[in-house]
Image 1 (cartoon, rainbow, N blue to C red):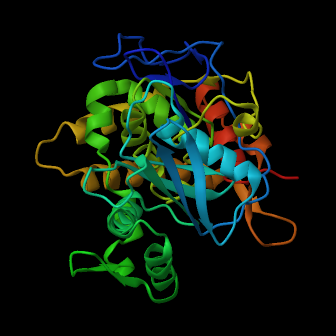
Image 2 (cartoon, rainbow, N blue to C red):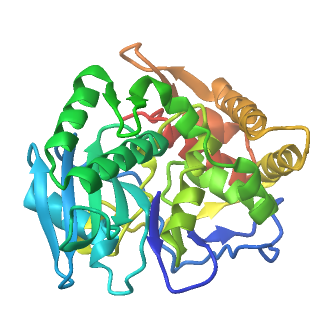
Length: 364
């Protein structure tokens, strides 16, 4: 799932060409946001994972009174490639001079979190107008790292030196706790990963796309890539971080790439694929359930996610009669001939086959 910024006022999603078939969902204008479908949109399959970059590092980027942006400090170290990427993510290098207080994203299985602040006149940083605290880690938890980097920012504003920041950073890495400048404490255990997974609003997504939310659900079920464009990175990140909750049974947020520039190195692993997804009666049923659940004012986002998850488990029961134990006896695999003999509508058969592929149930 990749996200990028674009010069358009609507949120746009690219998930490939949706065909009209038996029981297919009717085309309807997207409500508040635009959902654009067509053969020109990139559909990106899961490719072999690229090598991971080094996790867990802390850096400082400054913009001085002359307008120069400098990578001034790093602990313990980083690569030139990652440094260049993080400078690109840091809003201090943007020509439009928009200040993004906090952004996050993923690159080669490493998460980055960047908090940027303007330097007040009272700070000891007299030759600096803005600076960014850049932190990389192996886990997805924007709320945790937003809170931690804000503490580090206050330390840097007060002392003008990275020494105090490094001490606090090492304390959090080794003990999970550090003292803040306001006599409080930062505790890593206060930020549960599951709360980060549930921080977005599924109900908001459904209210924007209605029945067409099933397109997103299907793409995620089949482990396809969804490309999201919006002129505001904050909107992109708020929207995309919620999408993996549509396939809650996996609880896999590594599929999320919430801040992508269209540079060769960032798109290297996102290969194009012309394959289409076809919607059928089964998808219509799923879409109706999603909409009905999300529109229930008595239900929370967590309850909507639970309803979708239960329906997802029900979908897997369609595969059970056509599954058999593999030769090595370790896992279930799809008996494709048995699936074909069942004579499902083409759209349903195609979906179940690709779902088995996504779940690594095909014979090799």
